[in-house]
Image 1 (cartoon, rainbow, N blue to C red):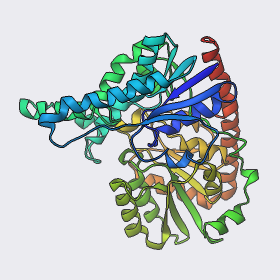
Image 2: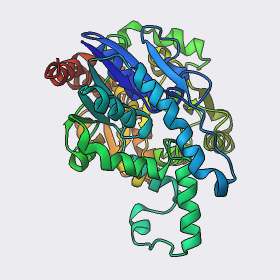
Image 3: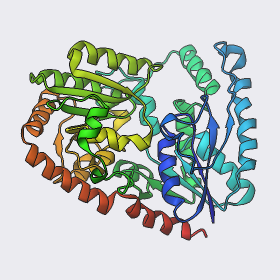
Image 4: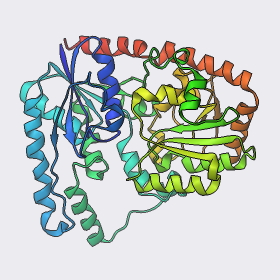
Length: 415
């Protein structure tokens, strides 16, 4: 059986979920990953893995600031390219990552033409991202839900035409809204967390990690601390992931600044010097922490375990807003697999996942977060014990071995 896994953009971090599904399914099936390429190359953290077969088209959206004349015309340009890509899919079943036109829409074209089974995976609430990114970082979801939509018809028309022109972009409101409406045409739905299951139905397929590759016994802490120029006395607080406003990184920076111990240092891994928000995060951290801060660019997935080896505590400081309530950060499973003590905020399924094997604090509270971090760093024996429990939980419930049986059960019905 051959399975085509569709990703909405092979050059973006949204490829991460499709890559995970491909790595697990390739244990039992022939797999290819298909999708458009909005950027110049495959997403950097996975580009070195040549075991995955990619099939893509460079998407020429033809966007123009002159929406008055080009909105309708440019919205049809990518359709032709995606239509050609759909014809090139060679598979017995299709697994679309995210309910977006450039993945699920591609899968629907294949299903309608050839009656190929179509499974939809929803790992984030896309409309939540759209709503969340429209907000000021300090405005709560409840505040915004009480606001009325603007009634100026000209502004609403301009907004609609601009969205139509960008309909294939993964941050397009029309793309997200249309994708949600079409979910009922999937033959099966999988989701990454409880919030999404309650919203869309389906079976939960948690983000998982290869606990054989992410095994702390394979990595010498002293060697990798030397490699990354970390001193023996340094106590490293670490965040890994693509910086976004809903991820609470500014709260984390503030919490580390509240800890007066000069040996406590913050590492942010996943920074992008082309992304304005990422640049802002790095600047804020440098101003607040000076020599106590170090930033790393996006790193290959194969190097994540060695970087985690350096950490004394890993923090998942999600805010609670539209963008985060439907998202479960995959990086929590990286840390758990590497037996690291984890502090996370009370958002989505994080309290259940870390129950008895991690620390949970309320979101948007740097003081409480600082207290939890300081406690872990001051009690290394307790931290190590909790970290080991986290790894055991990860092996049992969130490993590739655990995920494989779930996915096989789903696709054998279509075999």
